[in-house]
Image 1 (cartoon, one colour):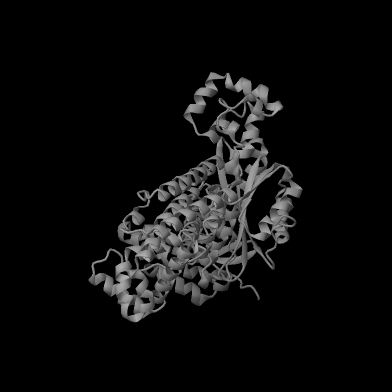
Image 2 (cartoon, rainbow, N blue to C red):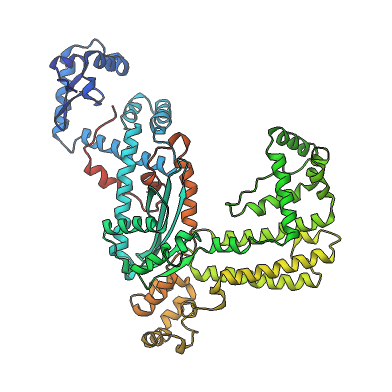
Length: 586
């Protein structure tokens, strides 16, 4: 396409020539806006004057030439008001773009909502002069996208630099998982944990699409490619945590096996949350039948819009606290517990509603045996949900997870003993059932015993304590410690300052703070504390992905947006602005 030439006569519309990388554009001498080369037409320039500066329409050319001379003087002085104002506009554009990314919103919200809202507020509170300044902030769809891309690259540079050059002992750990987004694309997430500046940091390392299959070799290829591009050493990798998919855990060709070929000494972990879900999956026949009835009853009511409305009306008439039932979703960790708790709370309302429409289901809600099973499921699923919630979140180490799980397994044994003796006080809903027969009691006791066995099978860490030294170096038997660490351990145990510090700070922080004085033993302990124990960060990121890449935005490349949204590392906006050639909105 042929480029338009600037005509000196355009000054009568209030425009002077502006060169941007060899391309001529028009710049308004009144508001300093730069219009594109395509806008170098008398009709568009006149339209700008009449629309934005109607009070100056009809001014003589000499007036506009005086403004042009003042503008040119400001351009020559990089410390002048024009340069400073222009830089502030670009900074504001970056700040707003970052907020848009943090809130996981569409990029066009900047020009469709944020800017119009800001203009309306400024115009009414501060006046038209301030509104004119705000109007020059560039927030178009494409501008916001470019800003987010630049900030994401800057964040990635900072994280990679810290992992390679600033992490304590050069150690870092990974957690990985893959999931399918709304456009059926397989997205691979990788989070990294490392110690820098005396703090443990957890950051998104990369988000990348798996173009074809999602086998272990495909995941490995993505990780290898990233490590090669960023020059990250495999020798520094001390741990990898994944879910239980065969592609991740396969003994011969799983991802963890492939990684071990690169870093033989790393610790591989199967996500604690996934293991707990697998251990609690099996139900004895009686409890499973009760659970299936619950699911069928809820689906019958919820699958029909009319039934949903009628059931809500019934609950309102009976002054029930809740008016809606909850669907059961297998992939949601807390779904079972929330489902049965709501059904138990509304079991009378469900019995009334199903009485005429679905009598074969309603009859169960009149059966004491069924209600006993339902009450027990409410209590045991609530206990499992509480364990799950303890395992969620950032900044937790394997010692905490082992403690949570070991305590739960011990509780299961204690609960089984009590149930066998007819004591149900620890199960609040189950204890409310007045007549629990021996068959139900035995089934509950058997289920508790099965749960305890399954947890011990899925968590072999509970039967051995490999963290005695990490937990408390002042109580460990010196003979249990490796020979090369024993002398340094003796020095540490006789350091009164370290003993006082150990009493005041968490375990991980203790080993970080003494790392400079007792490097060997600190490195050994941090190699056990750094590895992730769950893939919770990945699962949380996939939830964010659903908001960022929605059906209306199904073609979006999410890598930059999700990095800005999830990263705790702030982009260096001032540095990014300095590198850009500032250009006001047009």
